[in-house]
Amino acid sequence: MAIIAVVPAASFILPAQVLAELFNVLTRKVRRDAKAAAQIVRVWQDMFSVMPTTEMVLSRGLDVAIVHGFAIWDAIILAAASEAGCRLLLSEDMHDGFTWGGVTIVNPFAASPNKLLADLTGGTH
Image 1 (tube, helix red, strand yellow):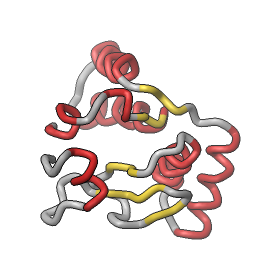
Image 2 (cartoon, one colour):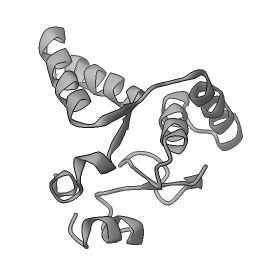
Image 3 (tube, helix red, strand yellow):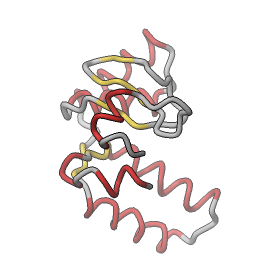
Image 4 (cartoon, helix red, strand yellow):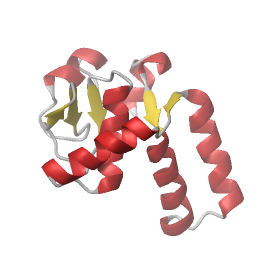
């Protein structure tokens, strides 16, 4: 993906929940065996900073789920991004343009590029 190529790795933070979902997709949908899927997850874990699912992240995620109707797993990802101080959360299946806790959800595959993402990538994504 072009975003990973043009944005410094230090600018990315992966919520632990994202890595768990990657493992789930690799084992259930892609049909990788668990050991191979875990190796892929560990590569991503080593490449980027990981935000753990703390008690505060869980608590804030519950609030997002209740107040805004997010699925709990998506709410935890958004809460983790907020706790980590992120401005953008890249997701193709969450609420594009929704802002909460200082974080704006951006679909990196949207036909019209988001200004914040365009600024971050220099217009290439």
